[in-house]
Amino acid sequence: MKTALKLSAVAAALCVSAAVQAQSNAPIKVGLMLPYTGTYAALGNMIENGFKLYVQEQGGKLGGREIQYFKVDDESDPSKGTDNVNKLIKRDQVDVLVGTVHSGVALAMAKAARENDTLLIIPNAGADAITGPMCAPNIVRSSFSNWQPGYAMGVVAGQRGHKRAMTITWNYAAGAETVKGFREGLEKGGGQVIRDLTLPFPNVEFQALLTEIAAQKPDAVYAFFAGGGAVKFVKDYAAAGLKGTIPLYGPGFLTDGTLQAQGPTAQGLETTLHYADNLDTPRNNSFRKNFAITYKANPDVYAVQGYDAAQLLGAGLNAVKGDISKRDALTSAMRKTVVDSPRGKFTISKAGNPVQDIYLRVAKGENNEVKAVAVKALADPARGCKM
Ligand code: BEZ
Image (cartoon, rainbow, N blue to C red; front, side, top):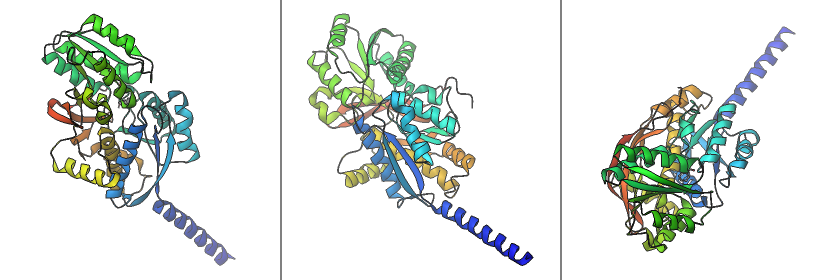
């Protein structure tokens, strides 16, 4: 009797260990929550392509584990954010969330990631609060905070002696926060923002606001738009006769991934961002070559951010040899790594945001070309982060 009991205990232990073994060899489930429709659709596709390119370069595995993808189109709609992220967390039971583009949707993702203790890598959305008051060990960004490129552009505009600037954006977190950064940089240089203009996301009826700009005659205009909205805004700014009359600045989203569609209306526009197409480094050159071969298209900043999201996950998984259950060791490795990005090497702040050079770029042909480093190793102030 005793022998029979012992044998069944051994068999049970073997079953458990086989199950654990199978689980530890199972693919890592990556939930991509991105916009695949609407004004930010191209951005979502670029992020996915960038992420998959890095995984492909590693032989399809990170930390020795295969990667399995689950996808949700978030439509850049904050009102559907919680339901959409729960499809990935609860229904698909993903190991890691990667998303998204729109700050309002990302805020819902960050809340769910905190509540469910799910690992979240943000490959675009700059919502300051996510690496501010909402900062958490399980949340890391591979992109920027909305404050970062805005502040850098304000510094440049101030250095150029612009005293009276107007701003124009969509009325949501990204627009408001990038304008706040711009104002801070500009005021440091002795300038000021005389008027903020907004319209609801993703509205593109700019005419009345452009008439207002023409009437006020500021020294400069700072605009945040991206994707399809940026294409329309830059074209309308030129059609209103403002190009060449009132300098137009913006965070680089105004001209990134959009130059072909904007045509001559974007040529010469200067923007600030953590990437420029023509950075002549072996890392950027090989990235651009592999991207072009794989997708028959040129990459943009969104592709870089997706690529670096995969690099961050890879750094974490390598440190724990693919054992994603070792969460503390994984997240601490992600935060300690120096990411060898096509944009140049960057580190991750305590709050989980890239510390990175912000370039001043100029649109030439189909490239945003680097002119200078606007601000070196710029860290987001991470106001309100208690980590
Ligand atoms: C945002 O919502 O944070 C965002 C969207 C597009 C480009 C940059 C930022």
